[in-house]
Every structure is written in structure tokens, then in C-alpha cells.
Image (cartoon, rainbow, N blue to C red; front, top):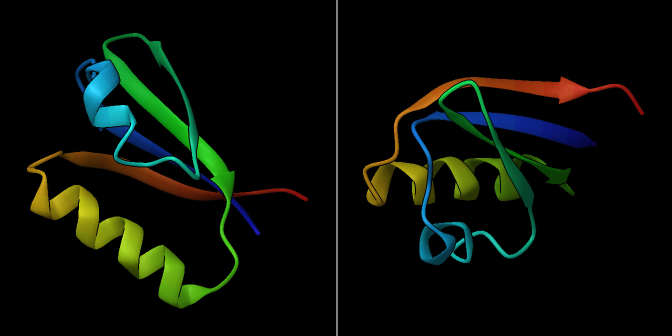
Length: 65
């Protein structure tokens, strides 16, 4: 499964390195992270990491294969 996660604001390079399994780019005042997620456990782990770093997730969606 591939997912896209959008975060308000521009994440620093250091912050994006906290998500080595995801690629990222900045657009329209948001940072977009995307990549392969193997299962629900990994997905919930990613969301927990966003929360623990204080990053406001504004959208998350599964991408077509």
C-alpha cells in the first residue's frame, strides 16, 4: 500500500529525516510525505511519530497502486 501524508507548514530537513521510509516535497505551505506502507502497524507507527514530534497531519490518504 502506498500512502500520502500532508503536514501543515514546511518541515525542516532534520524533521523529514525522522521518516526515512518516506519521500517528501513542499507545496502550497504543506509538506507532503509519501511512500510504501507495509501494514497497519507501520501506518499507526508513522502517525504516532508525527504526533510525538508535534507535527499537525492535515490529510492522509491511500494512493492507487
